[in-house]
Every structure is written in C-alpha cells, then in structure tokens.
Length: 187
Image 1 (cartoon, rainbow, N blue to C red):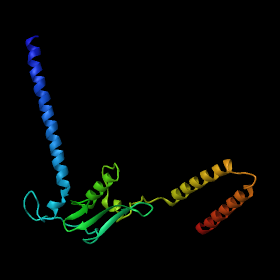
Image 2 (tube, rainbow, N blue to C red):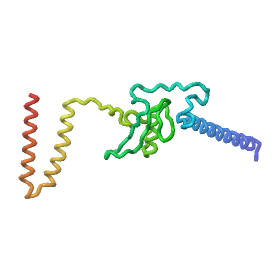
Image 3 (cartoon, rainbow, N blue to C red):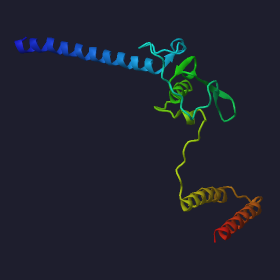
C-alpha cells in the first residue's frame, strides 16, 4: 500500500463517522421537536411549561367551541371514528394534549390510517366546510350537461331493450321538457 492510500483510508473512516454522528444528531433533534409538539397528559395538566416553569400561554382560537366541548369525527353512516375535547390548555385527543386543533387532527388522521402531510383541523373535525372554488355558471352548466349526456348516451347505447325502449324515450322527453323550462327561466 502506498502512503497516499493509507492516509485516505483513516480520513474516509473519520468522514463516515462524522456523517453517522450528524445523522444521529438530526434524528434526535427531530424526535425532540415531535415531543415538543405533543405534550403528554401529565405535563399538560400542571398549567406550567415544562421547559421554563412559566404559565402556559395557550390562547384558544375564537373559532373553537367552548371549553369542555367534545368533538366527534363521524363516518358517512354516523358512527364515531374518533373524538377530541376542548380543554383550557389545548385540544385533548387520545390522552395527549395538543396545542392546536390541527395538531390533534393530524394525530387522529394518523390513527385512522390517513397519510396526509398536513390537516386542517377545523375541516377534519367538521367545524367548517372545506372551501369550494367559485365556479362560472356557464362552466357549471356545461359540466353538468357533459356528465348527464355521457351517462344517458351509455344507457341508450347499451341498456335499451325492446321492453324498456318506450320508457327510456319517455324519460328523455321529460328531461328535454325540464331543460326547455330552465331555458325559459334564463331568457
């Protein structure tokens, strides 16, 4: 082995050790940041910040319901999927006190198997409806027509039998009359 090769080998080992140490430090920092976001229930009830011993400065969002309110997330059939409670120091979900409704929503979404990177807590818990983009009325009518026409065309092309031919024709005439009434309202 030459002197150059022997010098490079320890240097490479030191560089690799430094990379491993940096990765471990970054992982520890990420773990500490995660622990800071979600305080355990025992630290939350004390009314003091664990780091400084000063009173918590959590200010509830005015859009939140009153303290003590239980908010349930329900599925489309009405069954409760998860719940959180508004408390003096934050939002309690699954025995953990979170500083915001969105942080509690992220924890609940994770428990439900959702993989969103962010979560609007007010929308997730059903306190507000998600915003809808304002649509142009002409665009909305054209889009509705395309949906209707595509489905009706498929039925006419594949779903007509000799037994239901007159019923389908009658249904299409009824739709046509409805469209003519709408045209009269607009004109």
